[in-house]
Length: 400
Ligand code: GLA
Image (tube, rainbow, N blue to C red; front, side, top):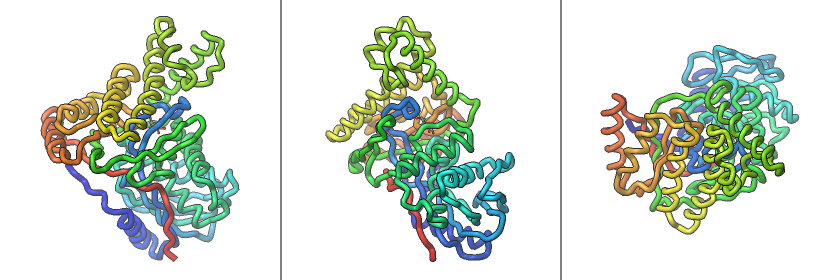
C-alpha cells in the first residue's frame, strides 16, 4: 500500500476547508507542523545523549479562530462533532484522549504567561498515528503555532523554548515521559537536511542529506505502540536511570545520566552490572557513538557508512534494548537484502511502528515490491510504505 502525502499548502487548505465545514465560518489562522523520522539516536534523548532525526513531509495542520465566551471547541477531521473545554483550565476527557495534546499545550502556554483565551479549532492530518513518526509532536507543535498566532503574548518565543514547552505538555498533561527528540525535530526541521542535536547542551546543527544518493523510505507495520505511562517506554527509561545510578555509585564519579558513562567504563564494569541494566546501557552508550559517526559520515559524503550505522543500531535494538518486534525486524531484514539499500532500523520508541530504510533512489521500486511481497507473505497484510524527504519545520499561516 502506498500513500502520497500531498503538499503542505494542500494540508493547510484542507484544514481551512474542514474548519468551514465544521464550524460554519472562516478560520483566522493555521498552525502546521511535521512529524519526524529518527535516523539515528534511539532512546538517547532522555539520557542527555545525541540524536540525528529529520522532519518529514507529512504532518498536522490545525486551523482555528479566537472564540468569545467560556468554552473552546476542538475538533478532528477524523471524528464527528467536537470536544469542549475552558482554555483557562483544560481538563482531561477520557473519551477524547487525542485532545490531551492540544489541551496540554494550552495549559503549558498559560503557565508561561501566554494568556490563551478560548478558540475553535480543527485538526487535519496526513501522518499515520501511533506509528513511530511522531504524529504527537506534530499535533503539539502545530497547536502551539496556531495559539501563538491567535493569542500573540509569547509570539517571539525562541524555537528551543517552544520545543521544550511542547515536551512539557506531553510529559505533564498527556503523561508520556518522552524526551525532546520529536518536538525538536518538528520545530527545527530543514528541507533536505537531518538535524544533529546534543540533548545535554541543546546545541544543534543541520546535516545535509544528499537526496540524489540517499532516499528515505518509512515502512509502517501497522502495529500500534503507546508511549504513555505503564508501557515498555517508561520501563526502559527507568532502567537507563537505574544503570546510570549504578555507575555513579560504583565509581564515585559525578555521573548524572548515561551520557556520562564512557565506552571504556562500560566495558570495564560489564561483568559486574546487572545483565539487563548492562544491555540497556550498552545500547545507549554505543548509540551516542553511532550518532557521531553517522553524522560525520554524512558530512563527508559517505552514505554507505551512514547506512551501516542504521543497521548497527537495529542490531542493538534487537539484542540490547529489546524494543523491536517481529514485524519491524522482518521489514529491516527484507530491506537489507535488497540491492541499493544502505541500511535500515526501527524508528521511534519501538515495539511496533515503523522501520526507516536509507537506499539509493534508483532502488525504490524494487525495494517497495520486495517489501510488499515478502512481508505480506509472512504477516498476511501489506506494510504502509511512505517514501519521504527531509522537510522544513513548523510554521503558522494567517488567513485574515
Ligand atoms: C519516542 C519519544 C522520543 C524518543 C524516541 C526514542 O519517539 O517520543 O522522545 O525517546 O521514542 O528515541
